[in-house]
Image (cartoon, rainbow, N blue to C red; front, side):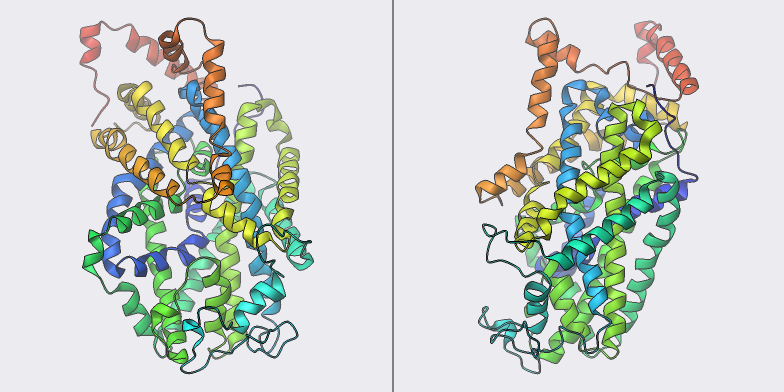
Length: 561
C-alpha cells in the first residue's frame, strides 16, 4: 500500500454526477427507444423495471460498496478472492478495447458540429459532389423507407461516403480518413485536459457535462412536441402491445439493456466509488443512479420519437419504417428529421453538442477505470499520476487510429457488438461469488456496518445470492447466441481468457492438493480492507475481537437489519 494518498471527491455530489455521466450515455438515446418500440412499447417497461430492481440496483450497490470499502479499482477489489483476480485484468482489457472504438464514435459529433454551420446543411440535398445516382431526397410519400436499399438519402450518403469514406467490408481497412483522425485528436486533447488532475478536475467538469445534455433534451422535447405528426411517433413509442410479454426475447432484451446501460462489470462504478469518503452511505446513491439512468432513457425516447413521428409524417410513411437504432439513428435518421425543421442549423448544432457531452462523460470514467487499475497494482506510481494519465491517453489514442480508417465503422461494429457480451456478465458473477459466497454474507455485512454505520438489509444478500446470478447467466447465454463469426468470438473472448490464465497461475503457486489450493486461493489477501491507516487499524482490531469470541456468542452477533 505504499505510494501517494488515494484521491477523494471534494463532495459526494461530484461522485453522484460522475456516476450519472458514466451510466447515462449515447446508448440511452440510440438504443433504448428502439428496443422499447420493438418490444411492445409501454409493455416493455414491465420487464425493464423488474430487471432494474431485481438485478441492476443490487449490482450497482455491490460494486460501489466493494470499491468504497477497499478504496480499490477493478483489479484490487479482487483481493477479496485472489483466485478471481483475472476478472479485474479482464475488465481493464475490456475498457481498453471499448475506449479504442468509442473515442472514434465521439469524433463523429465533432465533425457534424463543424458541418452544421454550413447553410444549407450539407446533407440536406443530393446536389453535392459525393452524391451517387441512388440518392433521393425525402419528400411526401417517399419510397426510401421501403426501397430495400435500391435508393439512398443525402443524409446516409453524407455520413457513409462524405464523412467516413466507408469501405465495402471489414476486409478492406483502407487509408486513414483525415478529418475523422483530427477530430479524434481533438477529443483526446479535451479528455486529457479534463482528467489530467484526476477526480479533482473531473469532479468540477461533470457539473456542466452532465447537466447540459438534460437542458438540451428539454429543449428538443419541447420543440419535438410542437412539430406536426409528433404525437403519432410518441403513441407508436409508448402504446403497449401486451402480447409481446409472452416473447422470451423481450425479457432478455430488457435484462441486457439494463445491464449494459448501468455499467456494472466494467470497473467504472468501482473506480468512482473508490474515491468516496470511507464512511459515506452509498446505498441511496446506488438507487438514485439506476433510476435516473432509466428515467433518462424513457425521456430520450419521447425526444427521439416526437421527431421521428414528424419525419414520418413529412415522408408520408409509417413511423415504424423511420425508426432505427445505433449510429444510424444519431447520424442518419435524426439529421434527416432536423433538415425538415425550421432553423435546421441551430437544432443540428444543439443536437450534436448534446451527443458529444453524453459520450465524453463515459470516456472520462472508462479511462479513469484503466488508470485506477494500473495505480492499484503499482501504487508507487500514484505520485506520477499525471504522467501515467498522459501515457495512457497517448497509448489509447494510438490504438484508436485503426477506427479512423475507411473500414473503421466496420471495426467499430464488430467491437461494439461483441467486446462485452462474455466478459461483463462473467466479471459480475465472479464479484458476487467472491463477495457473497467465499468471503461470506456475515463478513460482508460486518464490513458494511463498520463502513457506513448502517446495518445491511437481508434483502440485499438474498438478491445477490439467488436472482442476480440467474439473470447474469441468462444474459450471458442469450448474448453469446448472437455471435456468428470467428472474429466475433475472438473479440468476445479476448479479455475473458485472462480469467482462467490468472486462476491457473494462482493455484500453481499454492501448495497442497487441489481442494487445499482452492481454499487458500479464495481467502482474502493481506491487502484486502480499508487503505487509510487509522481506519484499517480499527477494522483489524474489530476482526480480532470478533474472532476471539466463543463460537456460541459469535453465532448471536448479527450484522443484518
